[in-house]
Length: 300
Length: 274
Image 1 (tube, rainbow over the protein chains, first blue to last red):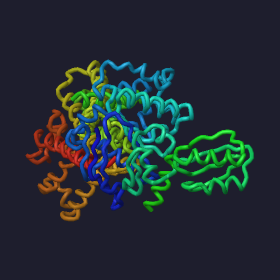
Image 2: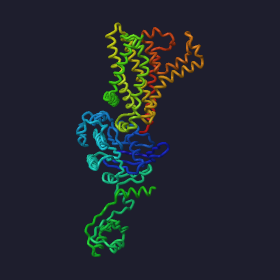
Image 3: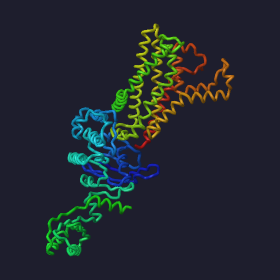
Image 4: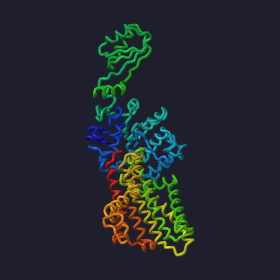
């Protein structure tokens, strides 16, 4: 759906994005992840044709520079800090943007209801809180049922419930066939939502894959968390001696063991044979945070 | 085309909602009535429209450029600074459509204010005075609108050049001083330095051609000449205008200011990153 080839952008001699290339497939949720200044927003702005850039970007095979207007009919965009016209009401704001998109029969009240703003439909946007603006931003980017949503930090400014609802909405939209490109600094959000992730640092993509594949490549082991009735140094040393166990940490009654999945049974058996009662155990998959930190450290 | 209309409509509605349209119309109407009733010869009483126009030229030269500049200075810089321009451009609308839409919308605001303000005042004067030359009055209203459009387009150019709303406002204020005061002062200064004040005081003295050319290049002067040569009582008293001060020349200059400013604004706007 989106193809970015050798995208490069400089601001006053400083390279913001340095010849990056990637593809976003139709129907997937693709996340751009990286620290501040990594080049995520610049990449999004280039895809939308908001900045001049070197390289090529196409959406559905159409060049963004040449057929930007046509392409934008298929796109919904939620900027990082959404700004509307203060003197318009929420309903008038949606009417204005719907008209720009050539939508005549949109049920705007339904859209406002979907983002929880139906009671504020006739209030001027100038008096809205940041969270309300973000909700209205989400409503406007859903106008005309776009095929592609570009969301720059979609849950910024929302409370926990609001952020949960937005994430739920993103999943629903994706299940309905909408392709989503999002950037976020919230690692858990990216991990929960995205099918694939591009990790950016200093204007470059340093890794691009699924979370699962990235952790495999980096050899980040899943962790086995075992809760014992009475842990002891003897047990810790016993577990450490098991082949393929990389590390054991003790947190109260819990042992956090870094190991490959194949070693789990041997660990559980060894603890039981040592006569220590196991209260509970579970496998914890590697988090995106671990992958992200390792990637960025390796890059630097 | 629909996108241009949508943007123009929004500009008109914005200025209607924030009462600008009503305020400017009221200012035009009140000043016209005041000038017509109290404006000349020191005696109170309604003057005909042509005499009123004579009194109004100086006022329009100051007021209309200010209104044009105030309407246009924040169009791009203000929206860019706020962040709404990036959102607007994520919709299927091109940069040239945004510029044209905004220009047409603001131009319509200024035209409506001119027509409503001067129109109502003209009707009041027409009721009280016999033998009104409506043609002259329409020429005056048309020229005022054209002058306003010049300053809207120049301020939109400045709005594309500057990154911040505040600097665009500073630029607009500078432009107003440039065209209303600095331009004429510099030209007069050069004349005095070159020919001396005593030579210029001679009633048969005629300034050189370059002075008249440089002078009419100022859109405010072009407006003044356009009205002066087309409104009967003023044109009959004109003796010092060169032969090339004609209606087509003044119209060409005013339209050139609009076109060149908008083309430059578009060129700069397309190079701008949001």
